[in-house]
Length: 332
Ligand code: TYM
Image (tube, rainbow, N blue to C red):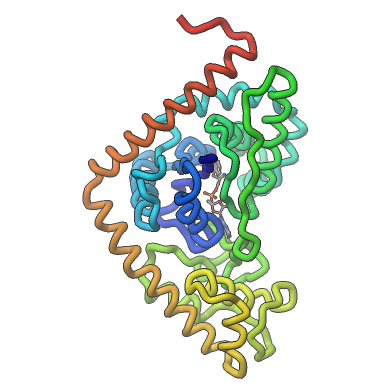
């Protein structure tokens, strides 16, 4: 079976709807057909200022959410990045293969460092994409299920894999992004031309999976739409309505075309009420499952520990081959 790998940062108390629809839903589906590695990049989470107590809690919380959305710890390998030291070790090698100019062109770095004032951005934020490349290349992953915002990092990963293979001999599989077109970018409910993100302009635009369902339903009912009345999918002209259609479609399993038919002649209020219902049906049992997993943190830690051991057995082989090819002395 070929391999998939992906990661989601533990930087908030809850994953958001964009994370789920853009990435996690594919993670769950891909476990059936692939040897799947899913991890929590806690080392990426310290590239911006963080609170240690919150980070530890959020890492466990992230693990609980992964299990609760349907990642199966027996079929898939789930782990925390910091528990597999090979990530940092390979990242160093890849940093030495990356041009300064090449890294400077990463748009996510430019955006995030501009927000903090470039002088204050950490060097870790700058080298973040090389750590991400290491995450992927250690496991020789063929596919990486992510949202559209990670595409440029995947391109860099592919370039680095090819560069290493050409210069030092084949060590890496060149990975492909796995991006579902329709839900690759879920938009902010208040500003439907901006992507939904935890650092968006207004909390009303962001749906956290673990928020009170009533709060989220209200946010959906207050979503920005447009001055027309017609419910149709037209992302450029009607970004707000199209975003609601996509959210509804992916959560309910009805196609966008079916929804357009179903809502023909109905109003935006109907679309919002229906979408809020579909969301509530999804999050109510999810929240319950997350609580159950969080009730037993020792069991969560155990699951992550087993995952880290499985991950290390793969990662250490790749790293050993890389160290050999670049001319380091053999280990004793
Ligand atoms: P992160 O933690 O920001 O996001 C996790 C996943 O959610 C997707 N996503 C979205 N998809 C659609 N619409 C949105 N509004 C939206 N917002 C977020 C992201 O594309 C991502 O797939 N750098 C990564 C974490 C990472 C990683 C890796 C991923 C570290 N190492 C190796 C894959 C492979 C990140 O910050 O994702």
